[in-house]
Image (cartoon, rainbow, N blue to C red; front, side):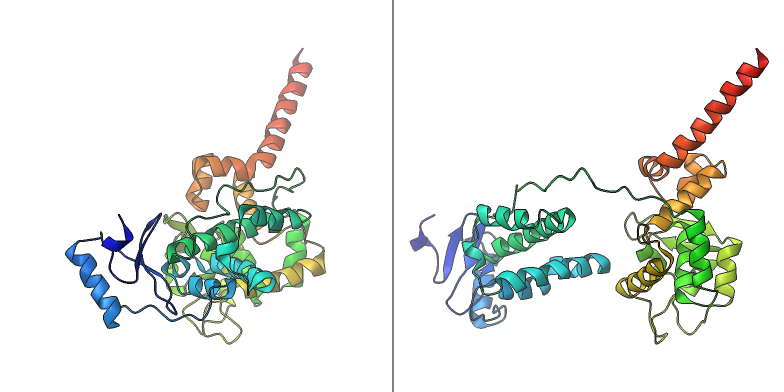
Length: 337
């Protein structure tokens, strides 16, 4: 397709047809070139019905601002969006005025390697940059994504998450008496075995027939989880000034992940439990069920996990229990000889 076949301000890029005009943000056409729908879309843009927002420059600051307004960003889970924001702010701080169209693969690798001493940060920033540069391609600011295909760093020292030791759970309960939000969050996580994001969205109306009914955000599974006595004690003294079980400081809405994470971290620091985070409570639930003699399908009935994830969450406790059983059988066999 030659340029002369295209109308004014319309250009063909490798991944589609774009409207590009000086002082305007590029806009990718949704319809096939030459179709009636294409010409209507073109007329609407020129007529101002779908006029792209004017931009003064193409830099990372403008790119991040555009991404924040995109449907892809709007579809992110709240926690994921908060995580992304930390890295997007980082990009703006180090290259806010730089032109993303000039970024090359070697620049991406250089940024990754400059944070090699922080492997998690380096890898997560690479993932977010890959998403951001894909948005750059969608805008028509460049034709390829320089972050695509760049490998993440490998680390041999990544610490595997484990359940909280019993003594630290007791220390947490002692530091956070009944009636505190931190205690309520902990009991909800440990007793139901759910992710913190699902716990923070639980409502009083979800309590039905002595159980909590929920739909997991990640898997969309609907679960009916009976309430344990420890959780019931926390619920009995909790304030009911909102539809949400765990509320923010004003008691008007659900507690944010950032707020809950920060508050729990302060307690972890106080009791010496920084090696164990909020998500480790989900491990506690699975491991306690295993230690109680539950088969994997019973564990999954509470946690909503797949068979593979049940094995992953309980593998260390499972090995210990099996080893105890094996050694007991070994001893009994010797005594019977």
